[in-house]
Length: 345
Length: 295
Image (cartoon, rainbow over all chains, first blue to last red; front, side):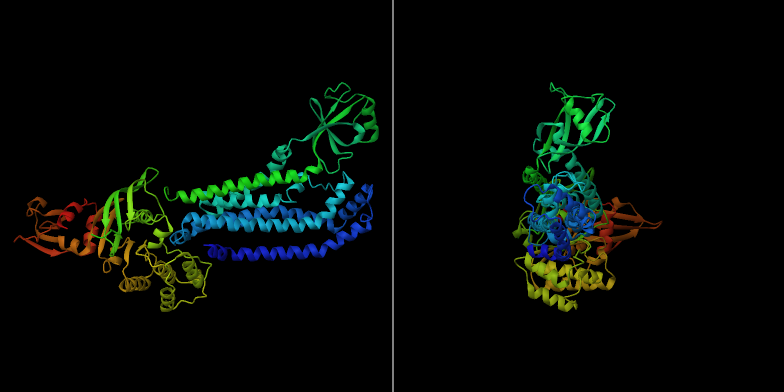
């Protein structure tokens, strides 16, 4: 069964290997340009107070074609799990049902339970290996950028490993995403028994998950840190003002906490009471120091809840674990559904 | 008495509210070529699905070669199955299929497989999807035979083939049986396909078994009786009418009788298998109790 699974997977394995080779070549070819920008910004020699050098570096990357390559890398890391789910997961079993070959497979001297187990674990393993290698390559390419972003604090490039866009394209989370997309496709194939509908459902569900998890789940997997700061210690962006007054300020960053993922904030008065409107003296204009110092004069402080950058690996492990659990559940669903065809149609 | 190829008791399979097979109790002897005949939708594929373990029963029980419907490697190795439409992996080569068989079946007969492929003139490197329908069916049959099963079950193996390919398929199946002890259960909606190859017949109609027995016995016990127009009740005692048709002057009966029909006013002649099967598929009651008495 192992040989047959490999034989069926061979064209896909060749395609994946070719993609990895092309990607590795592209990474090797373009990284020197990125490094030369890094060097010319003076970062290799900088050991303390490197924020401005780092900002310069990020600015120069942003204005050159390497910035586009960075975004392309993020795009690829979003596509990889989806493509794997669509083209490896959904057809894995649905195509055998579509073409009737499952009957040929199930009439050899191998139980269908073993057939399903070998298919799911082997191709599932290949899925994680592919996603892992891609994450490694692209992560290696982007490492100077993330490092500089950590030194620079809030930057116009908005690079941060914790940002909702970038978190799921770096580290080990892509493995979890890929394993989840693969088993999602396989399970959709087993339940719908048709390749095309299974692909459609996989794409819809996976896209929804990719949007919902960063918004609703990730910030709360580990309870965020909540601290009170002087207004001068935060970089203020635009404010959110609704019908009932002030909601929150759009914070760009907290001094001394570079790379933190800011989840929310509220203004408090001297007695610690939450403010819903700004003092009339402090007109919210363009976010500048005059506005900040006006707030400070009125004794206003700001309570910020955030995930510190130091929690990156903790958050990565939690999210990867969550996806691997989901993947295991979906794999188990496939296994049971295939075994149960013994009893029901 | 040896262990039957297939033995069922009250076997039934329901999809939603529709019974695809119901109240099926029979015992098919081992080592024979068994034809499973019935119109489309009569329950043939469901019955075969239950025999091969592709489906599980809603009611009743089924035993294949004295064991459960295949669910373990050991039982799977004893039972070969060539599914409807003779599925093969279109993207894999003929050689890949043989290797698949060899890797997944402990009793794989590589010499037999190689010889069959050679006799068929198939190119080992050819993609199976590029083979003709007849060649694909032969490849599927090769996989079924080379695993060396004790019982080979085929679901409408020749339904989609042209007449020449049908002939060749049946010929190579019969050649394989001649070589070794092997029971065959083969379904078809056309009795003509099976007429010359079957030892035993099971007729399904409307999701029920309407007739089953050894072909020779079925032919010996059924007669086509013609005479002056009359009522079915006026036939000699011990004769059971299966179907009847009347013209103004003449009546024709297909009857079941374990003894020869001797009546001066009637002309009796033997039936052929096609007439017999059509008569039973036309809605006649099942007559196996009488047949069992005679056996």
